[in-house]
Length: 74
Image (cartoon, rainbow, N blue to C red; front, side, top):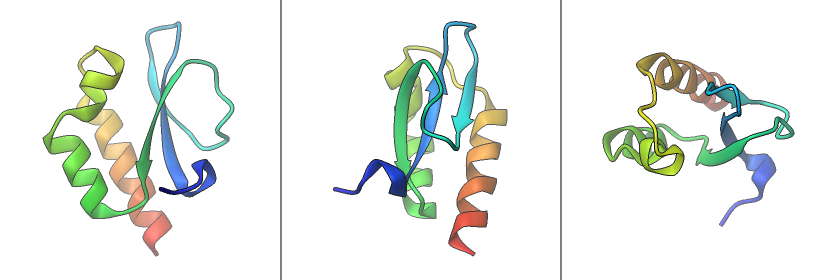
């Protein structure tokens, strides 16, 4: 278990948008992913965000997540 501040938050909001929430304060349903390539790959391959949001997550969101995780890893 990790603290929320140590995780990447992805948000599905009322405007039907899925975005990355760097502040942790955006309105909407949030899902958390740890900042590691392994966690990201598992999340993407198992379509965990699709289940969490009950919606197809665009590839663009996964690309942004991957970039954010790589930047965080150094």
